[in-house]
Structure formats: structure tokens, C-alpha cells
Image (cartoon, rainbow, N blue to C red; front, side, top):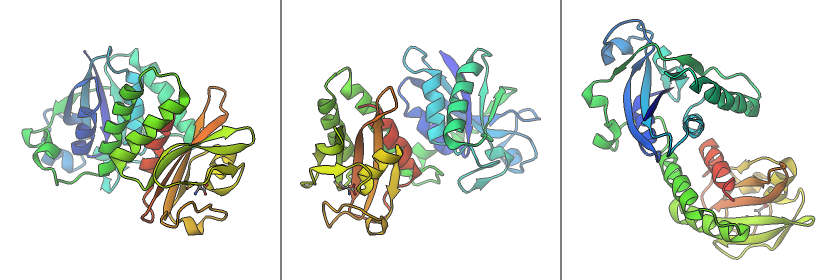
Length: 301
Ligand code: SME
């Protein structure tokens, strides 16, 4: 068993999240890297102790890697807000990864560098050795299990996506046929997330051609740079459209579609080979949380 400490804002949500990661044996909320001994929540709350709300994650390295856990941490943590996560402010809500095994640093650092390169700016998230850690009071443990309607700075869909991602990874296994993988991935996403339309368009010659999907009949072909799908292909990036009527050149396959997200699928060379296109019949369904998780899911293709 190994351990790593994640400070990602309010520990109620971070604990709940990591408990759901396959291979994690224990997620314990507590206070880390402060200047006193045995702090209470009340003391930490004054924001004068130097402690950060932190979750100790004990995991089986044969089942889950530190690299994966660190990537998961960044799906629930904003690495650009100094001493703040969501609405929670103060040094106790600073973000950080604290390690006990010096050899872990390089693994974590690699992920930090990748996240920073993607965002194009340095991260404010700390990467430090663990100085000290005190488990939080009993009432903070399993807080969201005990209080299912309790406060959580993470959106509910984060927890659905985590389950979906892990299930999809297991389900797709080592099947080698790409279209078959797309078919089951579209089915799994649609079933779990209840979107209006979920499917793939494949790059074939100079066009996107309709692939496996769940939902109403859709247009067969989309040109490079055309519509939301063709734009995501051309720009090689995820496009979130809160209101499809506001997107110049949007291709309406169904008048019921109100918002949309399109995520490119890449091969090892970095070429776009397909796009994952999801529509919903409500406005503004998709945000950065969807974008991050759908990129993870699209990469399973
Ligand atoms: N709206 C897409 C076309 C595909 S349908 O949404 C299924 C677009 O503008 O590219």
C-alpha cells in the first residue's frame, strides 16, 4: 500500500471523489502541512495555522498508479486559483500534492508540467513533501455519505463521470476494433448521462462520416471546418457550445438540439481521427467538467 496527500479545496468532496477511484483503499480527510500540533477544524478555520484541508489517499499501486491519481486530482482541482477552490477561500483551501516518498516527486512533476503546458501558464498548486498530517474530526469523515445533500464544491456530474470512465475502461477492455469501441462507448455515455444525442463522426478522406451513435437520425457527412464537428477537427480542440443558434455555421441535425460539445479523438501522431459529438435538448448543458471528462472518455477510443 502506498499513500499520497491531495489538497484540493473542501475535503468533503475530495474525500468522496477519491473513495470512488478503483484501487484506492482509503481516503481520509485531514489537515496537512501546518504549523501547530493536533489542530481542530475550528482552529484551521481561522486560517492562521498554515494547514490545508487535505485528503490522505492510500492506494494499491498494482491497481492504480500515482500518475493516474494525480491526473484525477487535476480533474477536481483548479490549479490556477491561489488559496481558493470554488467558493471556498483561504490558505486552508490552497491546492497541493504532498508526498512522503521522494521518488514520487518526479511522477507528479511530469503531470504538473503537462497540465501547465496545456493551460499555457504556471500552476499555483503546491508540490511539496508532506510535513505533517492530522486526520479530521469524526464528523468530517464520510461527510457526504452521512449528508447526501451536504455542501460540495464539486458538481454532481463529476461523480457520475468518474464511475462512467472507470466502467468504460473495464468494459472496452482490449477490444481492438475502433468502431466497436465507439459503439459501446456511445452507449455507455448515453445510458449514464442521458444526453439527447451521443455519437462519433470518423475522419474518412477529407470528411467526417457518421459513426456509431445513440439518438435520433443524424447527418451523414460534415466537411473540414464545417459546423461544430468540423471546427473541432480543424482546430484540434474541444468546443463547447452553450446555445447552438449562436454558433456560426452550426449544422442542425435535429431542431431539438440546444447545446453541444465536440471533442476530438487523436491518434498517437496527434492527428484527429474522429470526433465525439454530444448534443443536449437543454441550453448550456456542458462546461469545463464535461470537457475534461469527455476528453478522457474520447481517448479510450
Ligand atoms: N451539430 C453538429 C452536427 C452533428 S449533429 O449534432 C449530430 C455540427 O454542427 O457539427
